[in-house]
Image 1 (cartoon, one colour):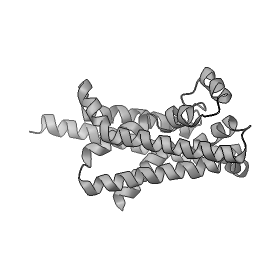
Image 2 (cartoon, one colour):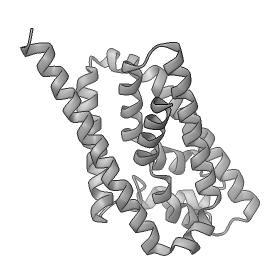
Image 3 (cartoon, one colour):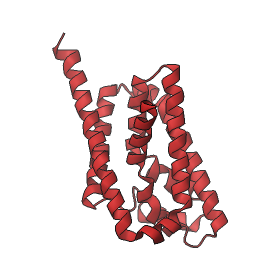
Image 4 (cartoon, helix red, strand yellow):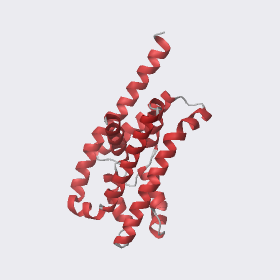
Length: 210
């Protein structure tokens, strides 16, 4: 249960679907309720697929390019901490990796569930690197099952959040969303710093304490 809660909280904080609410509202402003539900569902499904692929096959990609898991953890920690700092200070890029050309293209297309919503806005480098590092440390069957359930729970949370995006935007308002994002930002910074510290300790123990 602790493993489930840890991975769910870490992924949810890094992905931060609540921070995507204003973008989702803007991109689906002209859609009806049924279409918004469909986009929400397929966005969650796409995120789930991307995260599962990252979880199981990300480490092999690293091996192919000769990247150590500790290098990934430090790089991921920096990305995660930087994103969290931006959330905390209110300077987070509202486009979340989406430039004006992509945004305009998304508004012209009917299906925005895969891009830009699922990637890069939700399943970004922070969540992908987090999962790759997590898989490296939890490879027994029970841990893998729990991890899959945690990823599924995050996908469900994304669906519920996006499905309620227009309601949340009205209920919380801009200031409410900013407040929640800043709280999440603090948690994200802590996760990123912990990844960096753990990696440095492992490197020191492996290379200098033999």
